[in-house]
Length: 414
Ligand code: GLY
Image 1 (spheres, rainbow, N blue to C red):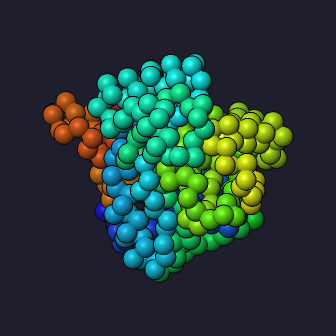
Image 2: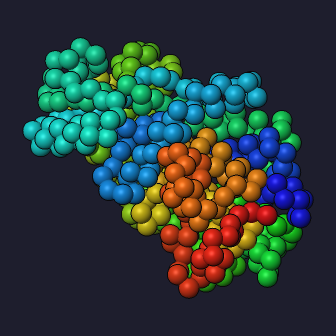
């Protein structure tokens, strides 16, 4: 790491991504402060269902392929990440290796699921096609009307609230300073790059290295030069927490269906989510959103009707224009991004933290990764993954530093 500006790092955002980055950066010897607008982990990460499901979430298209590659890589990291976090914090993170069932309830749904099966098979992903009788043998609570199911045996889940509590504890133990109730209003930039972060209270915190991990609020930080910001939008999700008074056993796997999912937790609890709505920061749940989730879930798993509703909440996924994340150095030297994880923030937390720490330690920027590719470096290197998440893909062409054109590691945090 270059010592010109010391080892201080400010991380804006205390959700699962910000805390994971802060924890790993602190382990790498940095002096880290997290600036959180509310309490750590009270926003998107608190609402998230916690599916570690790259196979189930796989989407068509080029950006979908990038997200899949990131997801597979991060899913592989999760067991070790969870074990290390549990050890560091002394807290359970609720990793459940259940696998996932994707279920169709009518002919149209079955046709779509066949298409999804062929797509995943063509990518070499591990997924098994199940006839209705076999799907009900494996998950007896499914309705007899189920037409087809796919089992993704490697798609698991974790409890994000437990992960957040553990990350917070691990960060504090590692010496990370957590400043809660400290919304960031703007960053200051001078000729050398980022120079300070200014809180909404007016307090100015000087610093030459900043990671923006503010989830759906990442696009709202003022002070960046034109074209250097990232357009992040909130994608609303309504989600329910349910409890079976009869105890555990209704479902053993995550069950996904068109428009939602049911994620089993310990002690007979289930998460039922989630709507996907482009409504800005509209924070109230709606009758229509909740009705459809409950109707569809109870159609597929009739026992859902007997569950108690413990909580109804709304969260905002951070979405970029291509719905792929933005991880790495941007146009302003000293400022890196770790945002835009959309539906995959929990899944991608370990990988994001590893990628960011490599950036902070001065590993290659995307332009260099491109040269590595030409030179035949192995597929999926961290540099390649960084290239896939390059913030520059959203920057106005004119704002791109000429350094990028000459191949220097522009924006690599000093
Ligand atoms: N990852 C599930 C969701 O965003 O609803």
